[in-house]
Amino acid sequence: MSLRRVLLKISGEALMGTGQYGISPEFIERIAREVAEVHESGTELALVIGGGNIFRGVAGSAKGMDRASADYMGMLATTINALAMQDSLEKLGCKTRVMSGIEMPKVAEPFIRRRAMRHLEKRRIVVFAAGTGNPYFTTDTAAALRAIEIGAECILKATKVDGIYDDDPRQNPAAVRFNAITYNEVLARELKVMDATAVSLCREHKMPITVFDLYRPGNIARVVRGEDVGTRIS
Image 1 (cartoon, rainbow, N blue to C red):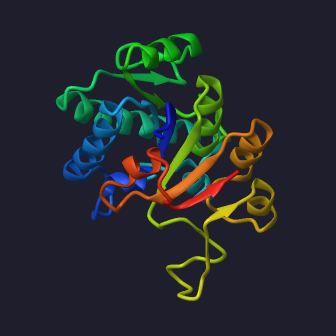
Image 2 (tube, rainbow, N blue to C red):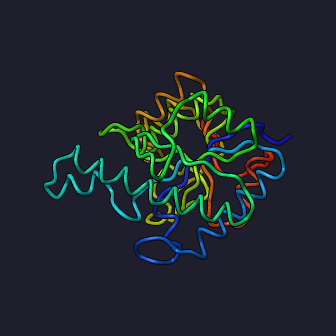
């Protein structure tokens, strides 16, 4: 049975495709087509997209920038990605709204929880931009917060790997993948799949997370249908 309402979290780096920076029009179109397919099947969809393909606040801070200023720059990067995704989805005929944690009425609606839920009920896809609107919080935490606020059934965390491993599978070929894992295990093992604040928030509100490979075509629909894809945190 397909999920009724989900929040899809996509890293900014995913939008680069095979590039090193920015947005790959071909790859964002492919993601949009998969999102549109899931939406047409009846699932209500909200998205949170990171900004790491353009600017990452933590990286800027590490190089000497003021952390709050760097984080606000990162939030603006997520807004660029949200607008790109909106453009791709609307070209496919999906009514899409961008809602921002920072007020910028020329390009996006302000985030208002009741309005976001109304958009979803009216069969619109909602893309949440600018994180929580506050510095020092990642887009993972924004995804957890928004998913709880809109009453999503699950967070779908799309990554470059096919689940959660006990070590980095790209560096350690012997790394073992988990089919399922608890919030406490993720925190105790310090697995870097999501930041600790996001995992703790999901644990407190019993929000399940499925981590899966975005690069395998059709995986978004498989996860929504409840197929055994990726790793489930619950």
